[in-house]
Image (cartoon, rainbow, N blue to C red; front, side):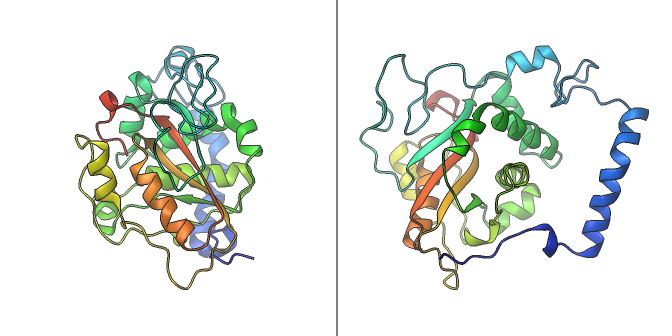
Length: 267
């Protein structure tokens, strides 16, 4: 059986649990006094995930066929079990990618806003939309824990908020699955990849992630979570570290699948 530390409510400090309880009980009264508006445009007509109909329609979800392996948009009636033109000749350490939308338009700008200090509510919103549309796919994938793709410590200090961690924590909470952010670390910084070709991205990410030697991942089935996937270089390097530590299977979940022309600031 694999062993790795798990983050759960029993490990939270008393003060953190107290603040969570206060937020839980005060939320209905706060929403009554100050009705929540759309998280993107601020208008009053919102649905269950706090989006107005206009913004909801612009946040394009899974409307077109996708590659069964890398989740890139593909043409209808194509067999992509072995990959598509984007990934057929790639060797990935992960088995498949689950992506909610295409990294473009309003979804792209929302993800970029979600990377800011105050972006946590936006990432939680997108996580809920991901679950609403891809829950059936997630339930067909047996996994032992949910692992966010980490940043190096310098970026964590500068960014303060990690979209991958927020996304992973939201999935774990709603799915009642284990959330394990401690098992994957990024001890060194890597260059920004926006303008780099795939071969350079892979070279930059090689060996960037590690699993602590004290952890035993033998046989573990893991859901690796990030906000955006472009070439798959980051997800491959992170998955490779997990597999080398003994993980039996890695599936990747992302909010959006980016193409080359929309890769700015994407992973």
